[in-house]
Image 1 (cartoon, rainbow, N blue to C red):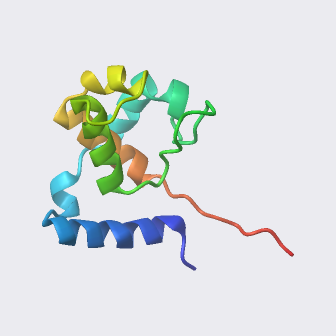
Image 2 (image 1 turned 135 degrees about the vertical axis):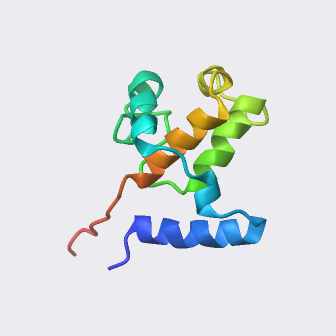
Length: 115
């Protein structure tokens, strides 16, 4: 059975191959990421990565590449959001790697409705 996590892992591997980066180079500490997420992210994105606010993104199971790029874009100002721009400015590279490791490690499954 193909899950969104399986698909994300495959697409992430392709993306890293394309940009010349390996997943292990982007890996952080998921346990530290969970702790950081509880402090800084859970109010909007949930500790489980399922958004608690209608304008917040679901982060659970997202690819390493996507999460890393978006957090760094918010931090640098290349991507702007009233809340995320402020939060991301305070994140170090290690914080980002840890948050990426946490949210990308959450397994998401999809069940199609019966006809």
